[in-house]
Length: 126
Image (cartoon, rainbow, N blue to C red; front, side, top):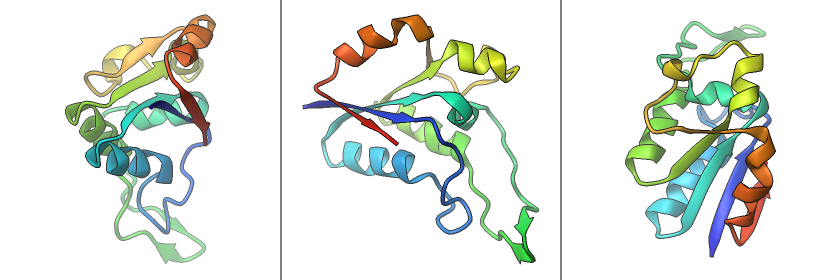
């Protein structure tokens, strides 16, 4: 079964887990043999931006000692054979240029999403 994971809501659990649960589970399940792909949209398109640095982050006096490196997590997915897509218009709305992205992330137009979704047996939206 081919599954597309869609992540739109960004930076959940980054203080507790230092990663995004949907990105983490995609990599773990792919490593176990699942046929998964990842679509980043909305604020989650930021995950694919190279060289992010959240070190020095603190909230309410709690210093995050192990800051998330979501760009590295996305790059590891691509290297591991997971197709990673990002919605072109969501990147444009945030002023993110395609050359600022992790190599291998495929840009898709918002209007082509129905066709992309049709390529999968199941879609999990986070």
